[in-house]
Length: 162
Image 1 (cartoon, helix red, strand yellow):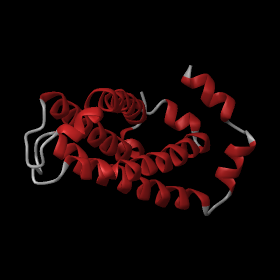
Image 2 (cartoon, helix red, strand yellow):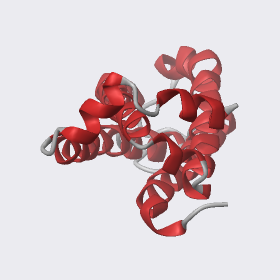
Image 3 (cartoon, one colour):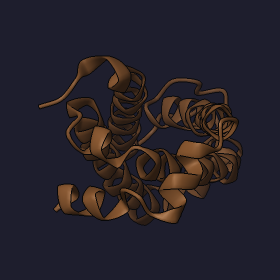
Image 4 (cartoon, one colour):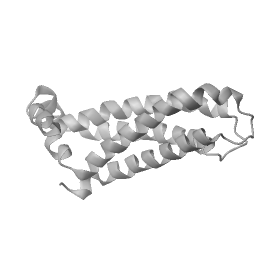
């Protein structure tokens, strides 16, 4: 399925524009890094508070970082899609990319659990209080999956295929 998508993207106008515009790939890299900074930087604070650390931080205040996290995710989604379109045959067979996509799916499902089960109760938490176990679980899964996404993304140029 991914291979047929990659084949259909090769030689499209967007693929050719990405490949033939010499300044575009570096701008995408920089934008991806800025998005990653917003995404991971905000999530680090939110998830560590969920996991039970930073108890002095008001849980409602840490959740105020979520719009920045979503902005970072949006930037990375757009630039990531453009990376994929720019070199689809390389990415589809790269084990680092494949594992990264699996971890992003896990992180996304975990974010849905956060939205449905944890976020509605954040206003009831006492400042300086202990996080409930569902929040701790969601925070730790988020930290683990996004750290894996970060590491695997960095390894894509080096891990090869198959």
